[in-house]
Image 1 (cartoon, rainbow, N blue to C red):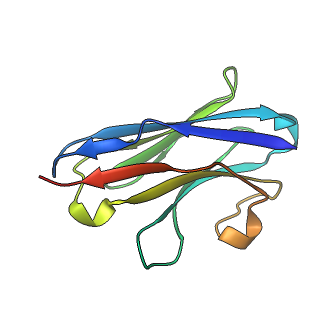
Image 2 (image 1 turned 180 degrees about the vertical axis):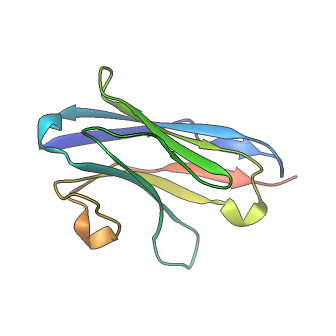
Length: 119
C-alpha cells in the first residue's frame, strides 16, 4: 500500500502562484509514475501533469511544473500565472504503471487539497 498526503492549497489571486506538495509513504518502491489531477465542481476529474518516480527530468509546462524528490519521497506542483478556471480540488496520485496518464491507471490517491483562484 501507498499513502499520499497533499498540502499547499489555498486562496490565491489571479496571476499568482502556488506550490502544492505530495508526501508519499508506505511501499513507495512499487511506484512508477506520480501524477496530479484536479476536479472542479460539476466536472470530471482531469489530468494535470505526471512524472516518472524512478528517474528523469522535471516536467515543465506553460504554467505548471511538476517535480519530485525521491530522497524525501515527495512530489510538487509549482503553479504560476493562475487563472480562475484553475480553481479545483487537486489530487496527488501514484501508479504502478509506466507513463500512466488516465485516472483509471492510478492505483493510489490522496485526499485532495483545495485551490481557489479569485480576487
